[in-house]
Picture 1 (spheres, rainbow, N blue to C red):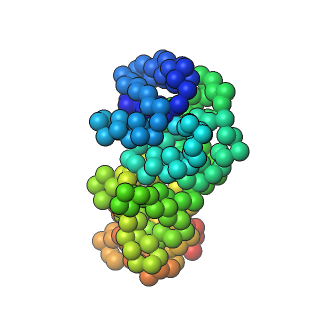
Picture 2: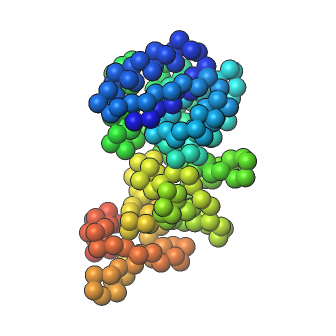
Length: 236
């Protein structure tokens, strides 16, 4: 497992690295350290990461500028910060977990377990998605997304205004961050269950979900039973 620690206090970073290597010893960890955003981005260009452990206070800069860069990437982001009052905001921007300082080995273990299981805690729900746009970052409200479509290692965000943006995470990494009301319709499609107005059967086990937006999306045989259960008797 490839871990990048982004922390401007070198002794703290080295301590987190020692704990991470101990906790992940069965996962053959490769743990690196960066002390600035620029150093972190350069390290990520050299070698991708499975997760970034991020301090929100890098050299007194606004950590949310850093956070938006991190959450726009393919890996999962775990914040380790003394800024506890910003935990809800961090979850809203798509972090997998938030560990308050002073951290403990037990709390780090919980975060790594969530990373390996691909499951975020039931904290504040995701409200924004950070998307690379040119050399900058565009923050997209989750409410503006009609549905998600897998595009290999990326996800297409199909927006209410008709645009399609490419999000930097694969669908399997996005799913743990979404609120529970989001459902998988098909291996390539995810939508808000509250946006589904009806299910249509087309014979031969083929189903379609019709959204409030007018979009008609495929529903796979594998997902249809779970989807009907989620939607309730009216969709049976």
